[in-house]
Amino acid sequence: MTAMAEREAATATTRRKLGPSLRGWFQDWLPRLVLAPSLLLVLVFVYGFNLWTLFLSFTNSKAFPTTNLIGFTNYVRLWNWTFETDPPSNWYTALVNMGLFGGLYIFFCLFLGLLLAILLDQKIRGEGILRPIYLYPLALSFIVTGTAWKLFLDPRIGLENALHDWGWTSFHFDWVVDPKMMIYCVAIAGIWQSSGFVMAMFLAGLRGVDGEILKAAQIDGASIYQTYRRIVIPIIRPVFFSALIVLAHMAIKSYDLVLSVTGKNPGGAAELPSTFMYSYTFTRNQMAIGSASAVIMLMTIAAIMVPYIYSETREQNR
Amino acid sequence: MSAADLVTSTPARRGPGHSRTTRIVIYGLLLLFALVYLVPLLVMVMTSLKPLDEVTGGNMFAFPRHLTFAPWSMAWGEARIGVSDTRGISGYFFNSVKMVVPAVLISTLLGALNGYVLTKWSFPGHKLVFGMMLFACFIPFQSVIIPMAVILGMLGRTGVDLADLTGWSFGLGNATVNLVIVHVIYGLGFTTLFFRNYYAAFPSELVKAAMIDGASFFQIFRRILLPNSTPIIIVTVIYQFTNIWNDFLFGSTFAAGDTAPMTVALNNLVNTSTGVVEYNVNMAAAIIAAAPTLLVYVVAGRYFVRGLMAGAVKG
Image 1 (tube, rainbow over the protein chains, first blue to last red):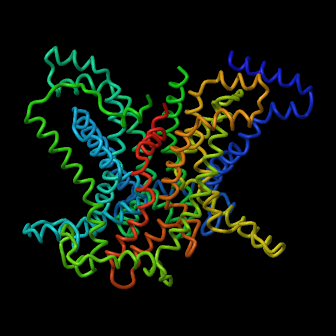
Image 2 (cartoon, helix red, strand yellow):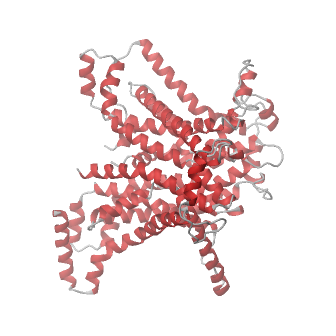
Image 3 (tube, rainbow over the protein chains, first blue to last red):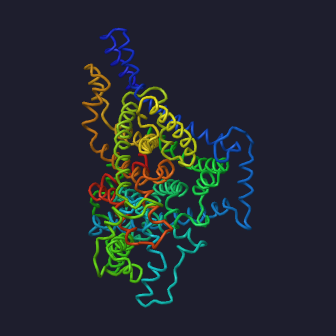
């Protein structure tokens, strides 16, 4: 508050010099005028558009947006599809795949990220070479990652073929061309791409742990496992939380990876809510259903992110 | 020290000492994982340097027997993207360049100004404004894509009318312009976040002193803040460059055919259903698509990591 008062005093000085002119008024409002376009863009293109999509989800829009309101019909349809398992509806497939992909992706990214960070934190020689190797996949686009993994896992020319060539002829791995197993390949590619990032987050957390605490534990005769299990991991618990949030929101937004690993998601086998939304809106001409699924995605992410953003900005003020 | 500096700094000499066996296990695991992370890239590179029969008939881990750069020139200049285009990915590469340069510059500049206002000229409600911009970073783009398509369609029709009237569409309806608009808008949250957090730590006394000396809003920004912003400008530019270059959803929705960016063209190339799948050409194209961001990572990895961390942990 004092900073603000001081600033006001400072601007008042400027104003006195200029007199109560238009120019003085302009100088006072200039900062807000500079911020205004950005804020307006965000208000319209983020919040306004979200509301627009919400509105569309209550209409009967097909190929083009309409304004014929039909209440919760689209949500009721999605709700019914959620339980339509025989034959599975696309929405049911999308939700099951979301659970499978999201669960595996989050679990293994956290697991590998923590493992690599702990290993790297053991007074390692050559950390400067190893760390960039774990992190470089982050610089790639999901399309490139997907293209690489699609080739790598392709049974005809990839891993299966190579191991057969080396004499392990009973090896069998064709998930990437098997509609039932494709989603696991998407998860493998996703974990490969993102686990390095989680490693970096954990490593930052580990480096922030006071070395004295570890020394004390060592003197007390604690084993390495006990030290990490009982002391280090509890200290870096906030990192787990941050990583979990970031990974969950990335999992829900995953879109390109599915298309590139599976080769444009044949028959909707690797459907996720993101691909469901896109195909219903732009190829199946069911824009209202697409909007409803987009609203559900938005709500899920908001439920994860809003409390997180709130707590993070609160912490900064302390 | 920020979180990212903790990652990239040299490790402190601490922690419990290990026996020889433990050391071997640690190094073994680290090297094994390094191999896992490297192998897909190595396979990509080797595949792109082999003739097609060696790819389909040989072992993907084998080194090329007949080293060839033909797949690279095919991918760059002759490969079939989509149905009719057989001019390779070069055009799409430059589509991406034309999109990414203005989008990065504009969003970074706006982010810097926003961060400056939000920290040094804060007004009642600035926290709410920042919170609203922050949430914009994380929305799923599926929830804005339909209205965006409608609005861009309207802009396109306005562009046609303007062209009829004046002979120039003012860029309205141009796919590259559309993508620049989209990427600037949806990048604002992140660029503002980066600069706000950076300027929050910048001494306000300097700004206040300059105010008392009668320096104007823009003078303070240009003479005092900008010269001290080099690290955060690098972080923001790299972050935005990587994100925009790697975007697929917006590119595939708002830019069709010849105007598509690199990622969309790569996806089309890899997934064309006509003719023989030329894996070597696909891999060459994928490496070309990845090259700019990989290069940035190699040259400025430290800043790259810092941007990622700032985008994830706001502290």
